[in-house]
Amino acid sequence: MRNGERWQITDVRDDGSITIRKPGHRFGSIVLPSDYVAEHVDLGYAVTAHRAQGVTVDTAHVLVEPSSTRENFYVAMTRGRLANLAYVILDRLDPNHPEPHPADNPDASSRSVLYGVVQHSGAEVSAHETITAEQDQWGSIAQLAAEYETIAAAAQHDRWAALLHGSGLTEEQADAAIGSVAFGALTAELRRAEANHHDVDALFPRLVAARGFDDAEDLAKVMHYRLARATAQPAGSGRTRKTPRLIAGLIPHVQGSIAANMRQALTERRELIETRADAILDTARQTGEPWTQPLGTPPAGRREQARWRRDARTIAAYRDRYQISDDTPLGPAPQTGPQKIDHARANAALRVLTVEANQTLAQEMRVGLLGSNITFGR
Image (cartoon, rainbow, N blue to C red; front, side):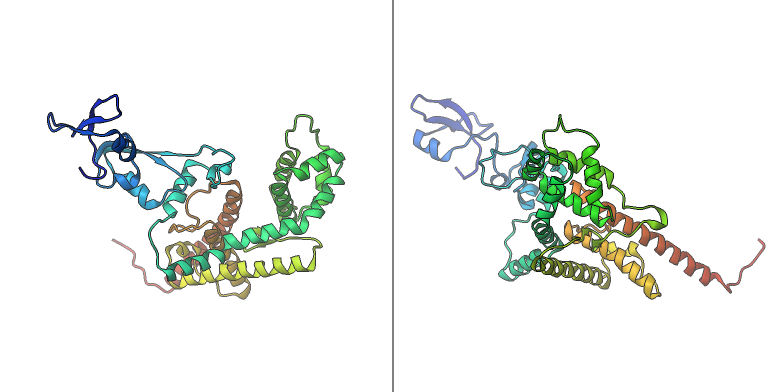
C-alpha cells in the first residue's frame, strides 16, 4: 500500500476498523485497525493539489482559495480527462480569522482572485532573487503610491474634518462621518476633486444642502457618492479646462497648507514615483517590449517630446502600479473602482499617443511617396 492510493471500503466494523480492497478487484481485501484509520486514512472524495499529482479522474472540481499558488492551481486543473471546473472562494471569513482575504475588498471578483493566483508563485527562489524581488516590491509605484496616500490622509485629516464641521452638517452628523470607515475614501475623493481643480470648500456645502440624510446608513458613503458624481469631469470646459494635477498621470497631488515634514515626505515619494515611471518606460523601449510599440516614437520638437513622455509615463506608471505583464499597453480589464479610474486616465493617454503615432506614420508615407515614379495604363 502506497501513500495516496485509493481503496474502496467494503465493511465498517463496530470497533472502528474497516475492510478495504482496490477498486475493480473482487478479492484481496485487507483489514485496517481503528487506530490506523483514525490517523492515516482520509475519505477519497477530495484531495489536496499536492496529493492529486499523478491522479487522473473523469471530472476535477477545484476549490480555489486566494492564497493558492499557480503551481498547485495548474496541477489541480489538469487532473480531469473530460472536464476541469474551478470554484473560486469569495465568501467572507469569520471576522476573527487572522488571515487577510480578498473578500475584505467589496470589489473582489472571481476574475481578480484567479489573476492573483496566477501571479502567486510558490516555487523556491534563491536568496539573491528574494532580495531583488523585495527591493522591487518596496520601490514599486504600487508601494510608493500607497505610502503617498497614507501620508496625505494623515496630513489633511484636520482640514477635511473642519470642512465637514463647517459644511452645514450637524455636529453629530459630522462626527459620525469622520468616525466612519468610509471617511478615508471620502477624503481621497476630496483630494481627487481638488486635483481636478474643483473648489471643494465651496462645492461640499452645496452637496450637503442638496438633499437630506434621513435614510442614510453611512453619511460618509453618501457624501462620497455625491462628490464623485459632481466631480467626474475636471473643472471648466473647452479651452478653460485645466490639466489635472496628477503624479505620473495617476495620483492626485496634495493641495493646501500642511506641515513641513509631511510636505517633504510627500515630495520625496512624488519624485520617486516619477523617476521609477521614467525608468520603466526607458528600459521597456530599450529592450523592445511589445507594449511600447503602440506608443510610437517621441516627436522631434522639445514641447511635443515632453508631452509624449508625459503620456507614455502615465502608461508605464499604470502598468507598474497594477503589476501588468501583458503585451498590450494596459493589460486586462480593471476590476476595482480605483483601478478603473486609473485605467481611464491611462487609456486617455494611450489614445493621444496612438493618434499621434498614426499621424506620424501617415506623414512619413506621404514624404516617401514624393518624387516616386508612377506608370499609367494596363
